[in-house]
Length: 320
Image (cartoon, rainbow, N blue to C red; front, side, top):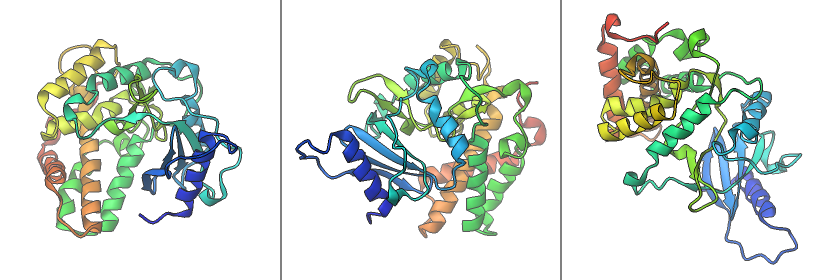
């Protein structure tokens, strides 16, 4: 990977924050953890520096990041380190934040994935009254951006038809066109929950905490359950793991679904939205890489085919 000015600037910032400049240094080179349009993340020892997306609404982003330092969210969110007053020159106009390093989920050990811990953290997050005014959670916006990215990458392709049909079948609020219904709005949400958003801190065996609040805000808490629900519905997540996750969320008092019985009246719309988002990104990425969708990507595209074939009366809406 080519070292960009942003990566170099973040590596220098993280390294300088890890220990005083006067301390003898035998540190390994900074490690790039992510380098995408929506965020560049570089680690040096115990410190991680992140340059957030260049097109971020700075005021909204700062409101979201402030959640991680809010006392009511202690033990739920990874707290940040003091950020520089002025971003490093190489980062341009991008907002930069500093974080302690936390040990991520090990993708090579799926049996140890912290599904129950994630569910409990979500329930605690959703039950916490918002400590200050916040912008809307960005989950529906990310879904809409994924569909737009697909349309740019695969303009007019027949493979996009079922994805677009499934997208058009969603209510306007799930497509970021209308506000969330009032009876489902106002909860503190993560906005982009997946297992990559959990770390152990202090590393390596501290408690699990949620990270990455770039999409957090107020909205329907069911959105934070949407990805595992979509994976379960598509056959990617085994029923036993899904039930463990759902049961742990309910046992912790999570408000996204009813306390018992069928959870799908609350989950149907959001699971369909995340299915479309995942399929749209799969088509966009595979087109950019000039390849066919892989097996997992194809499962999500096939799920859109099934969704698109549903009669309107078979599609659940959140209860009013």
